Length: 538
View 1 (cartoon, rainbow, N blue to C red):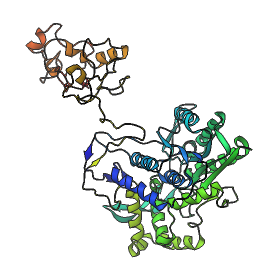
View 2: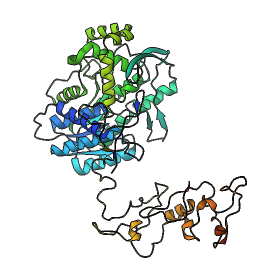
View 3: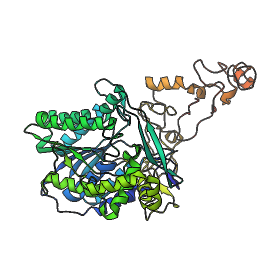
View 4: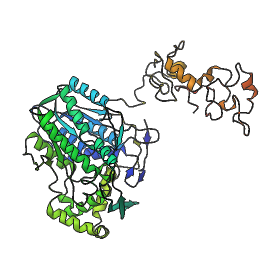
């Protein structure tokens, strides 16, 4: 458990920590905004890729609330550490799972890289064992990098124009106060364009559909959608006519190929052009923050459509409750409210003098800033940010670290493999054995192993023991490590200085070959204490 009182750590459009209670509150507010509906007799199976943020999360909540979907959501989030909170998506996923449990639903969440073949194999196995064929596949992934599963090459996406440089006003926040700045971008080269297409194009989407087809996990009438965006001509040079636009064109071409080839007579594939939204992905695009703020001013509160409303609209079109709204390229359009000619004319007027527009109507910039911070759980109404909060929240389906221990000692040692250099790989059967509720476990059990003779170490454990120099615990008296071995001339505690008498007198003298104990050690040869393995001397 880790109860902390935390404050936001923000630099520009980057907030490196998130608030658990605030993130949970944003999910609860989304859930309450979605009007429930009576689901069909059969709960459809859905696979949502990118379920922890943005439109993926909105489509997941709308599907749970109105369609009663069951299935799997995939996200890629980071757990809390001693120095940082978990990512906001981690806390949102935990809150969504709690809502699913309270509503009696059946949805599983997988925290893994959706681009990896191993993740596909894990998800397909879970589908085959628990849910069966998939009715809906939602593809809503956004990432700065992707590892090609075929070649192992890592591709990095860029946000740049193509052909000509781009200069535009942008929205900045200095201590929360909106300011107008300028962004200058050089055009991308062909390698950067190709890498962006590799990351954000339709290649991975096609791999997922093919994997489902190969495992016979496509239900009759299977439908898959991938989220896209067109936007205004104001932002077209950096978005639709830039590297991201090239990736979106590849995504849309992939939908047409899936429809005519892989899913011919087996299902449907669409790209969905959603409207503007404040998401973690959109805030990274230059000029989009300013455009979205001015769009909010032009539309007002009543004219703006949230991601929840657009998600509900999409589900009604996919399930047949409403007719599909398709354009000439076969894309589902949800952005008619944004691209209305009268709305765009008003935005262009504001864009001509953005500083004056924000000075006259600051509500748009203030709204954007508030929405941006709420993505990380900050500035959410009704949340007490002065109170301590539990930052170590378990991923759905996993027990929280440090809870429900069957014995009364310290923390157990790490698992086999030695992923943490400070903890050696455990050699079976080094398990916790003391009964729950005891007053005090035996010393051996407090160190993470049963009483009795120490079992033989595995080769991995012996290698760790040699690499970290932890054999010093077995040799001679407990002498501080910094006084062992050879010392350097010039200052005590360095190589070249003679070892003290205590170190020279013990059998073997000095540090064993290969030990990193000399000079820069931070620990001693004394026992590291109950429940801990020997600490690294790096």
